[in-house]
Length: 322
Image (cartoon, rainbow, N blue to C red; front, side, top):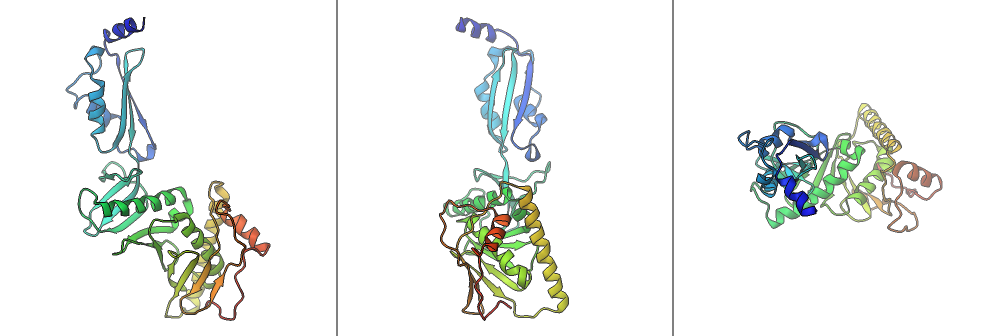
C-alpha cells in the first residue's frame, strides 16, 4: 500500500510551492522572492506543472545551502503535491570592523557573513579586528569565539546593550569597551566569565560611581578576578561638571531599575570582590560571606535588599575615593 501510494504521488504534477522562512523576521536578509529565484534558477526552471518525479529535492536543498545566508533548507512535497520549501536563515550576532576598515558580521556559529544592502541590524560593534583574511586562522577563531560570548550576552541584556556602544580589540586581543554614559574606558579582558564581569561592573556603578560621578575615573579594570580597579583622572572637575556627572549616574541607575523591573529574566551573580583605587593602597571591600556558585541574585531588588540587611557593605576606611 505504501509503495503504491508513493508511486502514485510521484506520478502526479507539482501544484505549486510554499516558502517558509525560519528565524527572527527582523534579521531576514533574504525574503521569499530571493528563495524563489534560487529554486527556479532565476525563473528559468518551472516548478508548478512539472512532474513530481522529475524533482531532485536533495540537489535543490544543496543549492539553497550554498547561499551564505542560509543555514539549512528542507524541501518536500505535501499530500497536495505542493512543494514545501522551509529555510532557516543565519542570524548575525555581531558586527566587526577590521583594522583596515573592512566590515562583516558573524552568526551564532561564528561564521563570517557579508554586509547586506537590504537591511541594517543593531548589533554589538567590535572594532580593531587584526586580520583582513577571508578565512579565520586558529588564533582568529579563538578571538571570534570570545566575540561571540560577549555579543551573545549583550544581545540578551537590554541595559548593557544600550550602555556599551563600542568594543575595541587591543593589540593583545583583549576587549576595551566604550560606554554610552560616562567618560571612561572599561578594560574587560577576554571573553571568559562575561556575566561575572558585568556583575562586578554593575555593583561598581551602584556602590561607587553613584557617589563619585560617572566621570571621576578614566578607566575601569574589571578583567581581574574578584576586584574592580578604578584609575582616577588627573584633572579636577568644575562644579558644573560634577553636577552633570551626578545626573549621568542618576540617569544610569534609573535605566538599570527600569530594565530590571521590566525583565524577570535578567539576573546577575553577585560575588565577593573588592573595589580598588589605583592611586591608593586602600580598597573598598565587599565583606559578604561566601556564596555558592549557583546562587544567582537579581541585580536591583536583591542588591538593595542585601544592602539593607548589611550583607553588602563597603568598608568605611579613612581613605575615601575622591
